Length: 294
Image (cartoon, rainbow, N blue to C red; front, top):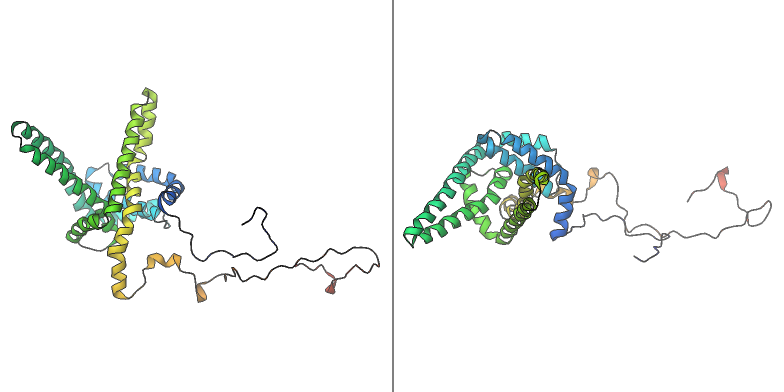
């Protein structure tokens, strides 16, 4: 495209397929487009987590909405949140109870083994193993709730696949992990630099982003791994097309509302201006007594 485009010739038209952006550019674009949605989603999640026993279903609903936003699917927040909260309640409730117990037991175990290592040097090995176990369980949760809301697998299969997917999609898993760590570090530094009044404002900002922001990062990076290794193979085995990609296919037949003429337009030939005047040879009259619009 030049500095002064030529509008007298046909252009390429509108492309049939979306022009995909990649990497951090696409992430920032999608995140920025849904920023306020993510803020309200975080507040909605906190409200549904007030009775601590609903932690699991609320987390499943959080990931469902975050997944839809990150994958640029249409989504009505409260409707989708409440629908998922109810439909995935059984599996996510059990998962949530186990998570609550793990959040209590794992830190206690690490502290216990740390004190134990002061007496017996080999206790340091137990500390390392405990921390490693906690990290493995944490990154498995990048996939557990996404599998709950995206598949009809049993809970035992979900746990097994979460471990395998975290290993197979190690690159995406690590990107998600370090992105969340970076987010937490930035929030912590903001809190340290805040004054008394600023501290309250910063706490409000952080509480409005920390959960849904993390879920958005995880969904953006890790859901494509689930789609590639779990969802797409299912449709391939059935010989069916994955309906998730319907929006990428151009409409055909009766589904098409408009026909794309991109690149098929004929160049517009400019006409020389004619002199106007009564009885002059250069004057022309249009047939039918009206103006001719080209």
